[in-house]
Image (cartoon, rainbow, N blue to C red; front, side):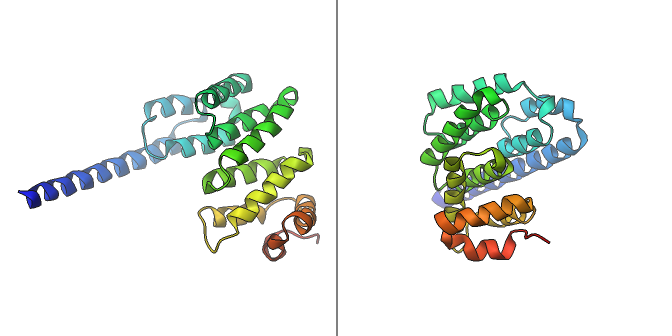
Amino acid sequence: MASSLCATGLILLAAGLVWFGARLTLFSVEQAQVEPGRWAMTFEDWRDTAGLRERARSLIDNDKDTFILPSAALARAESVVEVDPTNSSAWLDVASNAARRSATAELSQAAVKMSEITGPYESGVMARRIVFLIDRWDQLPAESKEVCLSDLGRLFGVTWAPYQSRIISFLKQIPVATATDLRAMAQVHAPQLDNLFARILPRPS
């Protein structure tokens, strides 16, 4: 009897995995075929699909103008933080949306710091913070730059961690001026990154 129940459970688990895999495959097809202006409707249809949140963020980053206004997006992100104040990803959402308007720039900087405080070792959130901050490097105050260096130090402070290869690919393509400043700050605040930066950061030609 026990072995029969165990076999039934395994069959149900396998069927569930196949079902989720099929949904992800179909979503990828939808993602490739649907025009940008219809993405929001696609997300609503597929809101329960595994991995949707990261896919949605990726698409939104590629075409922000087709989605809700920054003020509305900021309000939504803030509402998540209100009910889940330790959600580091939500704090980064607040920072990202607040950064789109000069009037909320200080809020963006504070939210970045809260994102680090609430999620200092979450690889996926660290990777998002690193990209978010380096993309705005010239506009960042010193404190936000130090958050970025801290994230890089934690992400590469172990032999292997998720998102390392993605961040390496990203760093190889940043502007030379940003790379030069990043390397100079790292020598003071994160010297353990010297060897990594020497290998991958762009240099003046």
